Length: 165
Image 1 (cartoon, rainbow, N blue to C red):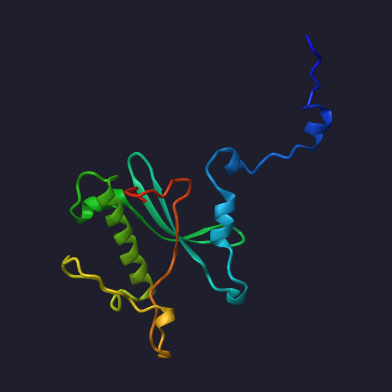
Image 2 (image 1 turned 30 degrees about the horizontal axis):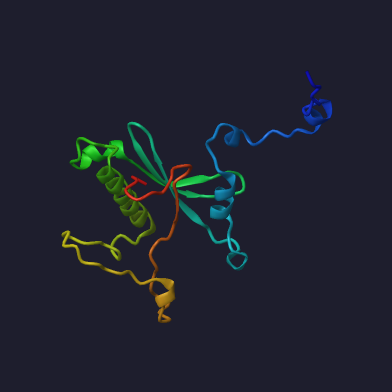
């Protein structure tokens, strides 16, 4: 029987550095998080918001989160278990409930920012496309407010066609 060199010896373990706790638990992809949180150098001090979506077996959680040095701050949240108050009694984790939870969060966020009257949305679902003016379409009107913008954070979930995120 041939001799095998021990690779993981004392020197290996002396220099070994454990990964971050949430990486060890398989909860956080720090490379993706760093790219989402990193602010442009020309926008110093400007808040950068993330729309965090998490799907559990019994609930859908949608939050608008602001990254700070001391830790993330949840600005607004909506849960699918709140949907029975609005008439959706069953199927609180399906595709339609995910859409409705996101819509509930969007309306709450616009109300908090005072933009609910400006961006009302369609009264009736007719299938027509309606575009909202963005900063690239700006005509120099200083009084105009732009729509709220956030980056979608789905965590470790894969963004495939038909996924609930």
